[in-house]
Picture 1: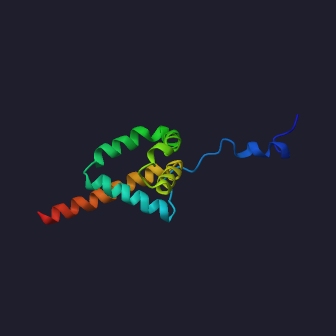
Picture 2 (picture 1 turned 45 degrees about the horizontal axis):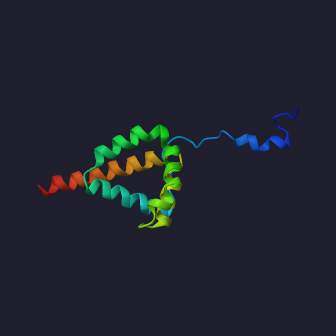
Picture 3 (picture 1 turned 135 degrees about the vertical axis):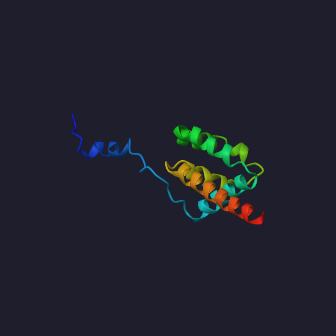
Length: 119
């Protein structure tokens, strides 16, 4: 029986590895896409429902990203397939929801302060 350090079992070393907890930084294309989605959420004043959905979906984050990948051929018929793929690949990362929630909260606070100043 091979031992754990045996070369044939090297593939098993990272089989159950997970990302570090906390927000993850997206690459430039992903950041632009996430920013656009977050701004649209705040513009439509859907901050509270979006934050509730993020918190409820947190345990199923990776599974949700896989479901989005499965439906990609149907959902990208009328949209940008590249952007959709960038977004789903970002959602597969463990800290993606933390990043999205932080951006929504920051944009909502920014919008609230602007609304308060205009009154």
